[in-house]
Image (tube, rainbow, N blue to C red; front, side, top):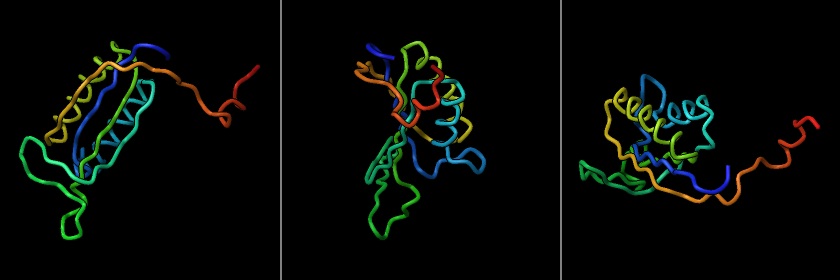
Length: 121
C-alpha cells in the first residue's frame, strides 16, 4: 500500500467494553481479521466529548476512563466498509464515540527485517 489512502480514527474510552472485552481490542481484532493495512491504539491523558465530562489521568481520577484513539489505515473503500462494522461494535458496547475518516498519503508501508526471513525466495 502506497499513495492515497484513508485514516479511520475512533475516539472511545479505555473502559468501553463489549461483554468482558475492551472495545478497542475488538476493533483491532476485527480490522486484523478483515485484512486491513494496520491499526494502532493510542491512550490519551485528558479529554472530553459529547457529554462534556472531563476524563483525566490525574491521581484522584479514575484512570480506567482515559481516552483511547484507534487509528486504522487502508484504502478508502476498505475503510468506508470497515467504518460500518465499527459503528456496529460501538452500538454493541452501548457507549458513545466519535468516528472520523480523513485522506492520507502513505509514504512507506513494509514489514521490518525480522519478518523478511519468513518470505520464500
